[in-house]
Length: 203
Image (cartoon, rainbow, N blue to C red):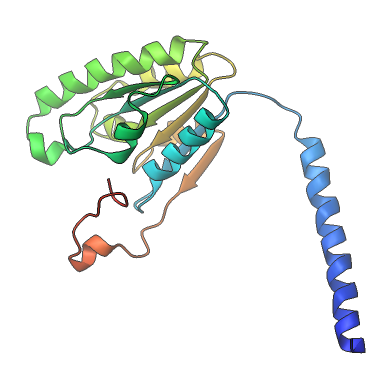
């Protein structure tokens, strides 16, 4: 090996040692154990996909989970087909379709409130360790659900219960309450170029 290569290897090892020490220090300092609120928001694709990835991970660890999907279309979604009969997952779907499909605000509000009743039950149940509230943010943005009621249910849930919330335009109070917030950016989307939605990728 050349001296240049050896020097590079030495510099790399020293840099990685410093990085490892920094990461180990942060891991040692993280001592709080609690249920998390994770908010996945933004205009980009992948918010629900990320939430269901966490659901799959939780089920893999044997955790009991609940899913409530608000405002989804009426076609069959792959995640529903996969998890609806799983013994560790309780699954509820509003199943009215999107608001531009129903075109009936009163009907949407009634459906949202009926669906929210399932969510409230899950958020009270200490045996449910992970709750996915898919597209919940729209219910608050459109005023279909009372924001303070939703925030109160989240605030008073069992101590170690994790909640994953998806949807665009998450409101400020929800973001403030959350432990982790990720915003998915719409850099480029196939649909904007006239490409139809794809099974397994989009639903």
